Image (cartoon, rainbow, N blue to C red):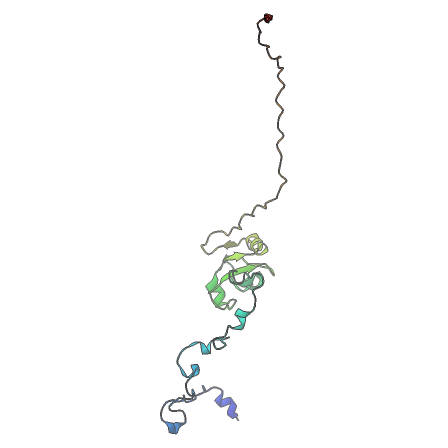
Length: 200
């Protein structure tokens, strides 16, 4: 004997929509349940917006900003571990659509990143946006291929050069060799002529 809730659980719920503005006798005529005047009685407007405070500066703008967040600029991935790829047959090409069919990712809106948790015993051709170093080593070590989204061999970027601040080097000035200087030549002077005595 089946119960009522077991029967009705399979039937979609049907609820008749409320008809507004169809006369005062319905109880929802004229103002249609919106009251009289005001922002709530008008169509559109920001009165429904989350955090709206009637024109007052909302809380998220009153609070001071502190620090910096990279949340808006970070790259988000769907994470798939190496152990989850064991369900594919040997020689399979595993891309985002194959992972979605296997229900390892919900959709293809984000890129896929392969992590190295677990073990892999099958040769697979994996196409993903990024790999961890351990996952890349495990895929290649078995004989599989780790490729990027262009079906090219995945390569990790070269490590950036770390700038090391060094103390400034002061160049030593070389001293010029001393050149022997001669005594300045004394100009020849005429012999002094004795002055004539003045007559008294």
